[in-house]
Length: 208
Image (cartoon, rainbow, N blue to C red; front, top):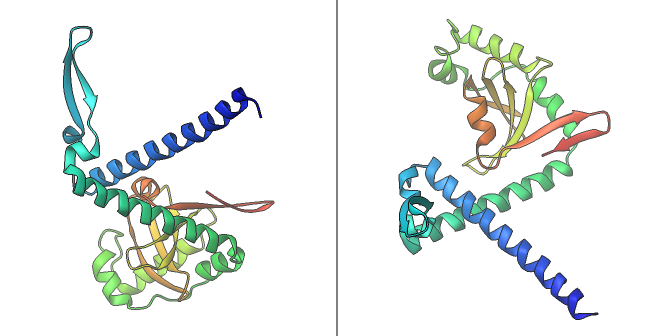
């Protein structure tokens, strides 16, 4: 192997490693910001130089939170990304047609009264029975977006979302039950860490 070929090989390896590290740092900073651990202003600083005058620069997460604080977010994001990869693997090995059909064919909601009290008002449901009827009608819509995510209680959840009305239903893939049905924020959910989009095509399921 020539010296030029060796240089190109290591250049590509180093460039990829630096890109991956930059991506992890950016994800950690974004997660810390969304959680309120750091303000946007805390990730900025000003520099003054003879050539450029005073200008704004990005501050590192370590600079904003200190080494220990930044490290906690790096570890948290790394664990979240690993959990996402494992969920993708489980989805790829699942019969997603059967899983989605199971969600759509749910006939009732457990602990109905509690969910109605918590979410019924925003959905403008006037009784627990009306709330449940709205849920069942929602599940049978042909236009739902389907996402998957590992939730904070380590459960694999299927999210069936109406992007027009912002209605969300959560389906527990392990128990085969609806966890909740509520008016949420579709765009906020899609941007959240760990959310995986599922699309049915003629060739099968696409997992993003």
